Amino acid sequence: MRLDQFIATSSTLSRKEARRAIHAGNVEVDGEVWKGTGKHLPAGAQVMLEGVPLTLPGERYLMLNKPAGVVSATRDSDHPTALDLLPAELTSKLHIAGRLDADTTGLLLLTTDGQWSHRITSPKVDCPKTYRVSLSTPLSESAIKDLETGVMLHNDPKPTKPAQVKVLELKLIELTISEGRYHQVKRMLAAAGNHVEALHRQSIGSITLDPALEPGDYRELTEQEVASAG
Ligand code: URA
Image (cartoon, rainbow, N blue to C red; front, side, top):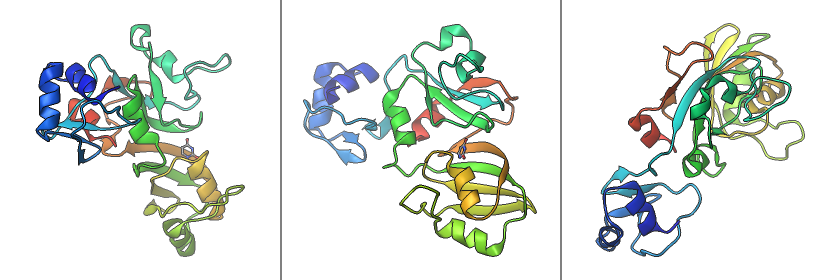
């Protein structure tokens, strides 16, 4: 979509006023002032008008407390999906921003806004995700250091980016990672000589799972939560 069209659709400005705002240097795309009105926005671009993030109207943003046994897919013939937990009138055009394994619980974000979810899931954007991880055995000091430095995953040529580890109990840690590779947390702990018994996502960027949500419950994100992502 062109920048002036995006602004006219997502703010009270007309197309002409949007072009004026762009020429005046009041519009930033991904943190940089853009003065070309006709340029097309790259995927996942964040547009700010006078410092205020803009989103297209009519977009939906939800958080769901995913229970175990539910798959992070929009359709599955054998298992209940995250979309099955939402009222049918909300589900049209929704997609999942950052999947979880079927046995992982916790924060799942769903949206109609492809640019927004791209900012959360793109490997180019460092969006931290925090997991509560129950382990089969206590984590050794050297395993913590390895996770904090980066470990090699099975069948993957690149080491993981440095992670943050907080030991909560003997066999319970909080792990923050900024990547989203396939089964990443389970594979990281396996690489560190341990085994994940249970996994729960607590936060994505500055969006934290609302403690009022029981497993299977959802709510709309607040404007601040939507604006904070990415
Ligand atoms: N890492 C995993 O191994 N599984 C998940 O569901 C999420 C992150």
